[in-house]
Length: 94
Image 1: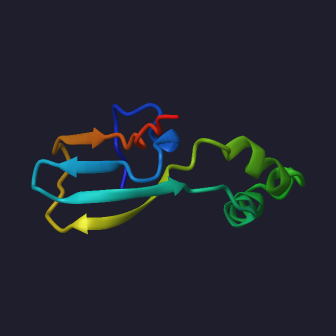
Image 2: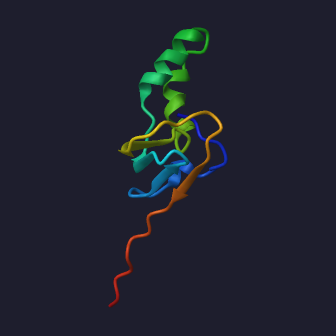
């Protein structure tokens, strides 16, 4: 799923929620960390550039999106609005 209008989506804290106009909801569980597998696929497309696999992980850091769990089912269509509710842990008073 691709969302527009949320430039720092990857930095959402775990526990945040993405709520859609249909009532569907996704619970965010953290950043989708980069791995070498996509780098290998890209490398296969450009065999003349032998360092692409190794360069992919640092280049993708902070740009891979998030891992989420469907918390509430619903139909989500292109053009639907979404709202993000950022999880803020309770402050502990000392």
